[in-house]
Image 1 (cartoon, each protein chain N blue to C red):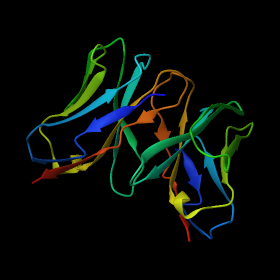
Image 2: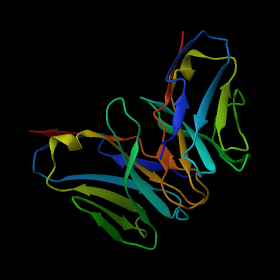
Image 3: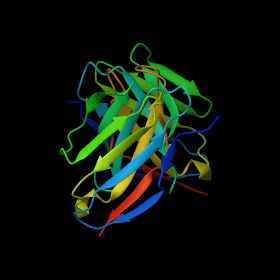
Image 4: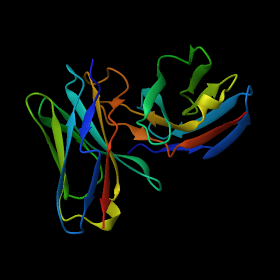
Length: 111
Length: 113
């Protein structure tokens, strides 16, 4: 089956700096890669996603890049704010709605 | 538009008992997936139902089962509970295969003592 690895497990940045979280996947057939944000005690929420026919996608301060050849994708958050502090999960999927999640990155934005 | 609703929110059970968790998806969503979330293992896929049929199943023992009703509501059942089953159980719904990311419910926090 698919194996998704996520790094780093924890990340601290100063407010206003950028944060980058990286994931690798093992199954070249995976074609959909969502990112979820989970605040303490709350449900995971989809923040951005990318499909395998696209190399990059942006939504305001958040961007995701995908390198199919290397089988890795990354989340970029620019101009970080304290409210960006949360756990971020990457995931990969090929068919159906079975997602393989990374182990999460705990992001802390220091005011 | 109501979100994904999971009941109950919290549950305490004794080892050896069984438990049933419920999930009502967003109206119109026919795909319902279940995940177990623990600090050590992260989010692990249990199973997915679509139009009352189990389409995918994760690597969990047979004590974990589920079903989906004609109105797309889903239940999961865990029999002969073990201490290691203590976790947050998340349900997520989606329109259909390949439609995009899930919308998660708030989860059921199960504690086995």
